[in-house]
Length: 263
Image (cartoon, rainbow, N blue to C red; front, side, top):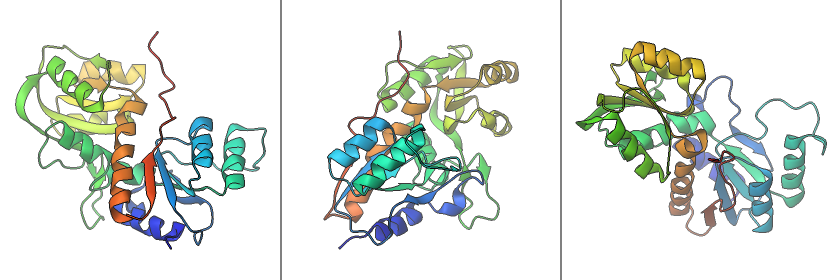
């Protein structure tokens, strides 16, 4: 019998909680560690759609990237969105685990996958934790296999993430040799990217004023969207779990969607 706790222990080796940001809420967030598990669903975010899918498909565990709950709750009632989601999951007997920023920074985590997917070899953390035994940390940066234009680099990002469009900041013809990666909403890594000598920072989204700052600092931005910059890794996470727990049925959510639409 595979338990929730056994899967949690494996996830902690894949994305050690020590790598999570101080403000984050990671680990087993809902459920009984001793509960038996036969079916697991991975997803980027627990939404009404993905929660309903997990309950409908008989999952005993959701491994979500974004935590639920994220912020402390004083009460769990049907009068709030987090409360409704939690009630749905608890009634269906679905546990919830989140690795979030620990998985962002992990050795096989999202930023490492982004860097390697765009051809960077020997990627290093943008902000290494000096106290970490593996010198891991937030973000990644490294040199591309060959110089390219910002336009062509953006096209590579689109192909890797299987998306049709993205936002750019910077001259599309400028040369790109060194790139930084920080999935999700991570414009705060602009300064670290500049200090690392990067020509471009790839992050899901950032603020208008960070875009202006990037222009003034001569660092290009590639912004594929928060969802696209992270969701691709949920299928890989499901495959990794399936390799470790071959007797379980594990899948990436089929129902969750990017809430943003091009109009």
